[in-house]
Image (cartoon, rainbow, N blue to C red; front, side, top):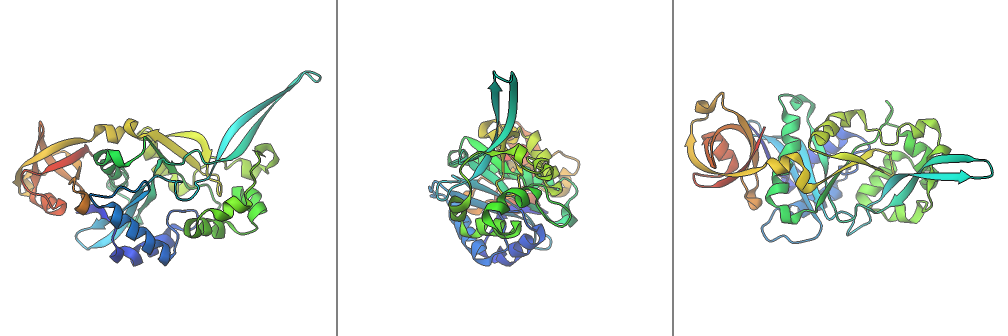
Length: 339
């Protein structure tokens, strides 16, 4: 059985290996031990009943209970930009008209902004290649919406996701090569790493504050603005099904698109319902029943599984293995989402 659970300090080495597997461009998962130590400490604090910080990290992993192996990750970050600036490029249009020439010129322009300060971000989505089947990607992607719905008061009214930008076969980012590198003088991977590990001060120090005219960039850089990495195509498709849309914001390093949605408009958040476990049966009795994504609603020992159950109004008949994985018992309330 696959179980989504909060990450703990014992997962550090595994998460470091996942960071290496994702490669450059996954800003939220740099291969840095100290960063992971801090993130796991922050996440363990967030998964507590009394947590009330304006900025929180809810980092979760996907575990195969049959082997104990961690095979995926996902996260929710709250209050982004409040403790260190969160930068984006906003893509806008300027229109100029000359009466003397009777000519109108339209230009796309990139503005460095902090428009997403305070919103909630979902990210750090990873799934081991051997598990990219049987709807596991949708499970780990949609599972986090149970947490959003269950702890709604902890999250902002807008949720965003930054998609990894396009890179060539050698891992080079044309957007970075022809824009960011001109101001920072370092490679894309180094800049991405510095941003993730050391913060955004170097961006404040060196990034131009004036608008950048897209037409002045080489075609190779223009063509990848708002274009996701090939590995992000599936994740972007899942987000669009949930109601996320591109809002003309892109990442300042690789030009990848940022998508957003009002929290209460996310399809899965709207679809989550509460139910009570009224009967527990042998899991074999539920073969052929509809599967649901199920959360235990217990923030201090949070668990999510995907298992068949019988829903009768607000009552649930569930299997013993699922109950054990959720660490619940008869009479407990759970959150469910159609799988």
